[in-house]
Image 1 (cartoon, rainbow, N blue to C red):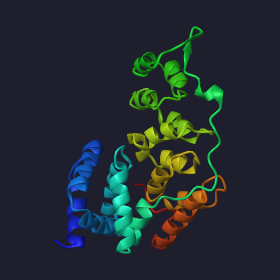
Image 2: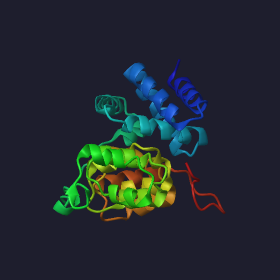
Image 3: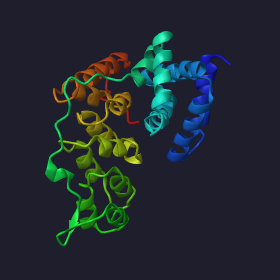
Image 4: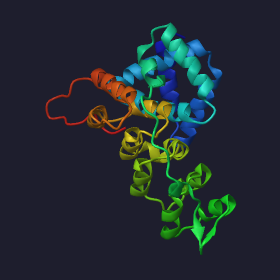
Length: 258
């Protein structure tokens, strides 16, 4: 099976699964079991087609990004990075690039690092994780400021958390890399406004923001590229993605949601 056939098979099988979480699980199983070189070439084709606004490839790329952004994928991503460099797989290289950071993010203040308190008593991690399953808005608002990623992960699954809550969390400055990573790995990262907030935040881990950048809409890529707060490597990557997008047709103002 050549690279184009393998890419088409991956896209077709991924999109045959209706649930987004199951899609990510399927892609994760594929990337762990396919030979690395064959995987790299297939992903390069998917990325290239997605850059050219092919709908199916762009939709499948969402699951691919989610799978590669998951914890424990660092070694595999590094292998893909080496394959992309060795075989000049430019579209894949843009997906797995590790943008350099010129400046370290501002340290989180001591006030932000303090655990939540109830009635003047600091809560244990176990108590905060338990509270994150509660359903009242006041509790959620307080816990979304928690510094521990385990608490944030549970909050993000709470049905009373809204998209504006998550956008505020993703946009918060200074941010905590571990917390922003939880947002990037959650289903909320499928929302265009959440993706933009993550990429715009200089505290988002660069590998995650770099891969999410390829999913941004055209106008969001332009916004990131012009933002001095975003690390230079991420801005440069967004400019490359803009250059790869097909020309806007008359009457079109966007490259569509995905």
